[in-house]
Image 1 (cartoon, rainbow, N blue to C red):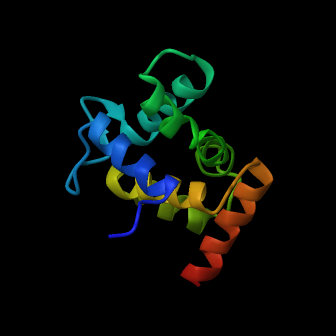
Image 2 (image 1 turned 180 degrees about the vertical axis):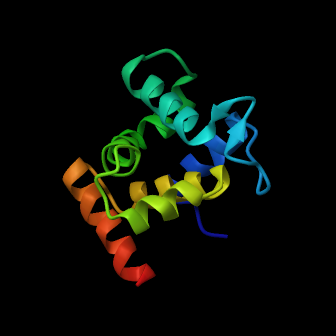
Image 3 (image 1 turned 30 degrees about the horizontal axis):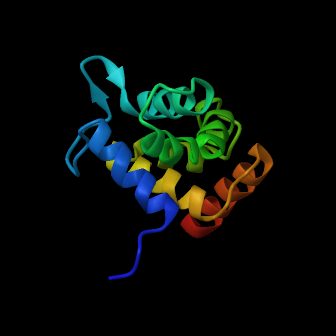
Length: 124
């Protein structure tokens, strides 16, 4: 069995950390799991020592993807179809999306915008 990519490792670790399964709904106890995932990523990247070093490195890798999500999806700057699509994702699939962005080497919000623009083309 081949080794997991960095994005797959992130998705697996985040799902484990937040107890996210395939049937987990986006809203849990009044909170938005998409936002919670992004907040934990931010904590890992900007507050060293929040997590054990191995887990921190895995979560920190998703920082650029999470920033792109915030700018293009959360703030509604992307095409409405992409915003609707990403907002409709279960937390399980949202982790996979961020993992894919890691594997695609999204390092700037501009690259994130291009990634989301490609999602529109795939959906059309």
